[in-house]
Length: 441
Image (cartoon, rainbow, N blue to C red; front, side):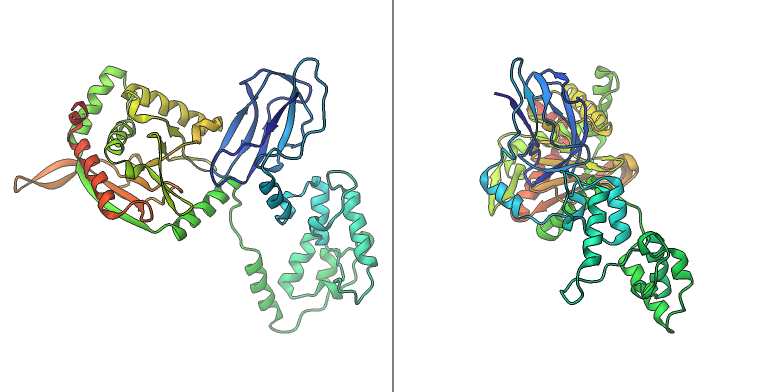
């Protein structure tokens, strides 16, 4: 039987994925494990590998399409196999029924660029347009416009006014009702010149129209879906998870000495983040409650110590994962960190690179930040915010002394991790930072 290629679920809360680019074309030979396409989730763009060897056929999701998780997007045919119609979904029936009931948005409708532009000009909702084929074309939009124009008055349908975007903008600024104008454009469409020649609006209407226009059309920089959904998820985390924060200033003298020795052995590859991954893994082994998650009203312990690293990229934030960090040497942690960060910045992460994280480290010390409070990465119970190492005056044996110190801030979800357990974990981590040789005990 042909092997199905489905839109994978890379994260627990993921419902859809966007096809960014196919790396193979229909009819191409593919080998199992080689990159097949790139998809975009709410956190990252990843490469999806071919699940089998054969010939790529029946691609149903085009670049730019947003597809529900579990839906078949292509088939891979083994030698001698013939193509078959791709099933609509390999997801459970419950998810399929939910998808069917979910409202469709204009952005999710398949339409050609020209059709979208015409729909915008005529104020047409693409979800109401019937397509002759699978994708809405120019003719479909024009036919919809004609049907609306022909609709009898009094049946509840609003009169459709065809107007260019510039004309609509000018009308809003001048307080002119475009429905009262006679258009000079094709098919009676209202152009900017028609608005400019219209009589001035009543006193005060201009100010009201401009204010309304500004409310409806906020100015700002457009963002990609990764950034937008990241903002939504962080808002959800901040507004639903009861955050509390624990602060600890630690002496980093021996941490710096450890890094110097490690770099002499590893040729300069070890960063403070690598050291922290090693130490955090050890502290999580002692206090597994900090390596838990809040899911569906229950505390779920993670089987492995998988530590995510918050990494800034151009279009948002990614959190690649160092899996089983407690079993890795410092050199192995550094190699893994270099690999996932470089591929993440290049948009080449694989699904496994972002799955399974149980605890996150966010280090802004390299940007000169002294301390900050990080927002939880749901459903994880905690995230560690790390500030810079700087010389500060501290009390040593009752006397003022200058020591290199760093500020640690532990953000906790009180549903899964209470204050006492969070403090115990942070205390264990602070002890390890101030005396890394304790790892050998």
